[in-house]
Image (cartoon, rainbow, N blue to C red; front, top):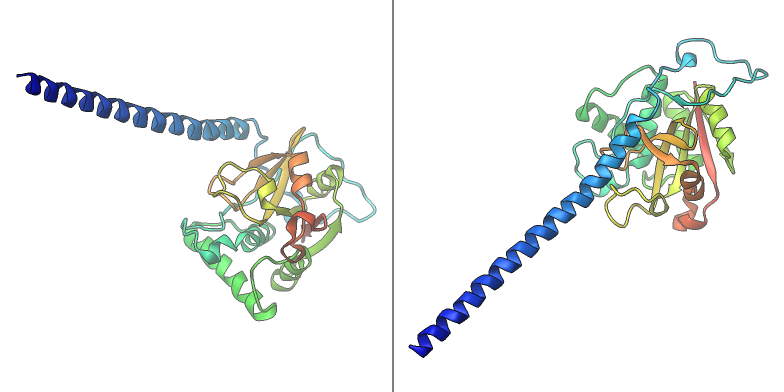
Length: 259
């Protein structure tokens, strides 16, 4: 009888340990889901406060004369079509390296007055740019600002000027003139919670607008990247060109794209 009671007591302890373990695992999972959802909720709130996207005047009308200075509005958000660099969420080697091509595609479609109709359209556009780069550059991975500017000029007949040491005011002025701004970055300095850890070594952001203290971007590095807001300081601090892979010490450059 004593042995029977002892066995029953041991079984009871095991059952309670299993129940406790299941409760801990369930609680941990729920807490992880809560933290993940917190990033989603924060991003949704930030996007809801952004100005509505608007069409650029210079895409359909005559550009401003060089000697004229366009007034800088307090906020701005140009209506640029969006795609992630992995339209079908296939984050293989090619698509992990395709942020430059996705960013260039978005800029091209904006100035050509075209949208992006879906993942098939976006994928084809990205692959077309990759093919051109492989033929004319000999590679497509990690293109510098100068190399990307060449792609934009020669493949799409757009203007692309590389500017060193950009400032917030320069970027605002360019956007006010209906230009788009492409910023090469040390991707792990950006701090986007939706990047796959540890984040990309090298990354491109397309700047399409601004608020009082943030740039509005199309960030191809995440499916949530349409109208993604970043603080001015975050973008300028992370701004570094490829620099042979030593991105953290790369020069600060931006590409101004216009018709």
